[in-house]
Length: 226
Image 1 (cartoon, helix red, strand yellow):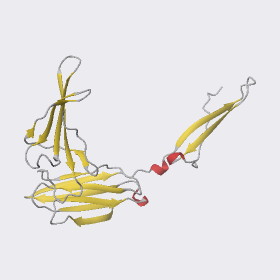
Image 2: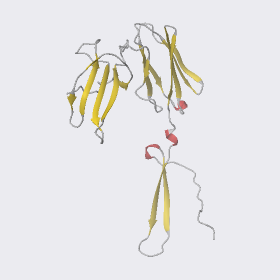
Image 3: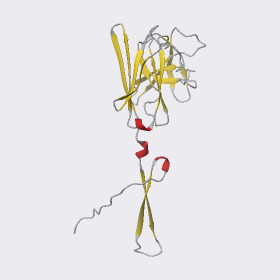
C-alpha cells in the first residue's frame, strides 16, 4: 500500500513545488490505483517523518488515453527551529482567511544552513509588527491575534536576501465582514378555508449564526402600467 498523505496533529500539510531524487513506492487503495507515491531520498531516516511527498495518480479517459495527476506536499512541524527542505525560501499558512478572535499563523523557512528574514504585518497602511527572524534558526512561526479593527484584511510581507538575490513574499490575509452578512427567508400565510383570501408574506432577516438582525428594506411595485 502507498503511504497515506496525512499530517500528524499540529503539523502543517501544504502543497509545494520542488525537484530532486525520489524513492518510488506503489500501491492500490479501495477505489483508485496509485502508481507512484514517492518520498524524497536522503535526509531523514525511515523512522522519522519525511518532509516531502509526491503522489502521482494515473488513469485513462473515455478515449483510452493515459491521464496523470501529480501533487507534491510538504509536511512541516511548526515548532521546529530549522527548515529541513532544501529550497531557498518558503512561506505558507494553514489558511489565509481568519476571523476576529482567531490567531493568524504562518510559517517561513529557508533551506540554507543559516538565514534571517524581515517580517512585516500591516493593516490599512498602519504597521502591526516589524521584526527580524532569530539568527539561530532557519524556520520562523509568524503569529498575530486578529481583532475587530482588522476587518477588511491585512498584509504580510517577508523579505529574505541571499547571495545577492531578494526573495520577496507578499500575501493578503482576509478578515471578512461576516458580521454584516444577512440571510433573508420568506414565509407566507394564506387561509385555505375560503377562496380568494389575502396572502401575507413575511421576510425573516437573520445575521451570523442565524441570529435575528435589524435591516432596512425597500418594496417596489413592478407591475406593468395599464
